[in-house]
View 1: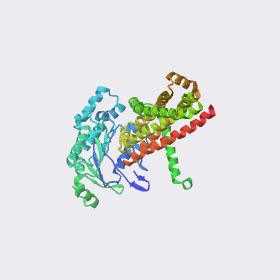
View 2: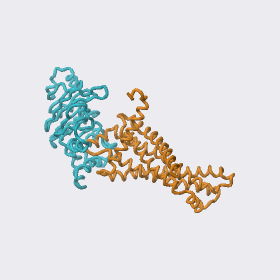
View 3: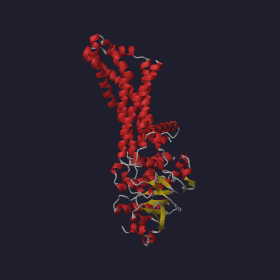
View 4: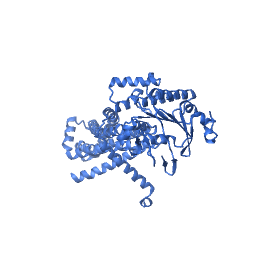
Length: 234
Length: 257
């Protein structure tokens, strides 16, 4: 897959394969196209060339309605949570469910409470997003995504801007989501605490292409200077 | 070839106009197609219609009151104060009521829509709706444009009525005219050709205010500054469009009646 913005070639040669049940972490410096890759996968950005095969469908070839059907099976966690700020937590969680499922009122209420319980924030059900901390907003974002039972989760910088303890909490949440819901995940981050806790495999994005890859331990032992720069901060 | 001949600023304006025309086309394509966002539609009727009543009432009352106060001393030397109700009713119903209320709505509603949708765009809330397989165009744009198209004409008719009452109060303070005489003179003066074209153009005002606000918000760039830009340009373009629609409507009305 390739993608340019104007004269700037962001993704030069991206080749990525996610296996069922696997969690891949993508490491890379800011502005190297990690989030662009995720947005191409979910059809928010169209790549200039290449294939984006998701759940058997090539995303750039799909009509809007076909794309929406694929999106129902993918969860996307935004960096800032992207909670709908005019709605309460309950309404945020109901929003996709009301539109994309045939559940009745009681079933929706039950499902909302169930996922809030999973992220440990049942007490925030009637709060507005403005009343929540950064970590809580991210957890609610996760709850809003898992409520649709996605098969694939895309995490865009899930721990950016959080303190180390909350980073560990969110990383534990990613692992628990993987264990409980058996989802396949791609986690974009440059946070090594998170990468260590969640990754089955790590890919390092450098100059528009994936360079080194391996487990956390393998990359920690790498002699590549660029790869080492991520581990030096740990 | 044309890119080299047309100045860059003109190109930008043409691209904006084309973008808004496309956006309007998208609205007509989706407005009647399911799924329908009925709850959000009702909420927008309330937000755009009911919550503008206070501002529109005050503005309408002052317009009528001031217009009558200005008209009385002008017509008095000619012994024509009896024509004040006719004069202010024609002025308010045909022109001043729709245009001033349209401009007020462009400021209040246009900027509100531009800022709200712009802020949702910047904070990725629109993308979040998109990736959760919910159509943000249906939820955010269709509901708001429909609400402005239907509510702004109602607000303008309401503002005209309040303005006529304001005019009556001014006249009553000066000449002790009865309400019955005042309104019977008004109904004798204004006819189909005054009310219908003036009402039809208000639908265009409402539609344009909704389209411009939604388009500027929906196409806002990344960054918080772009929210301010979206709100500001929504007001400027919507106000300008209200004036342009008014000019076109007057020309067409003059041709037809």
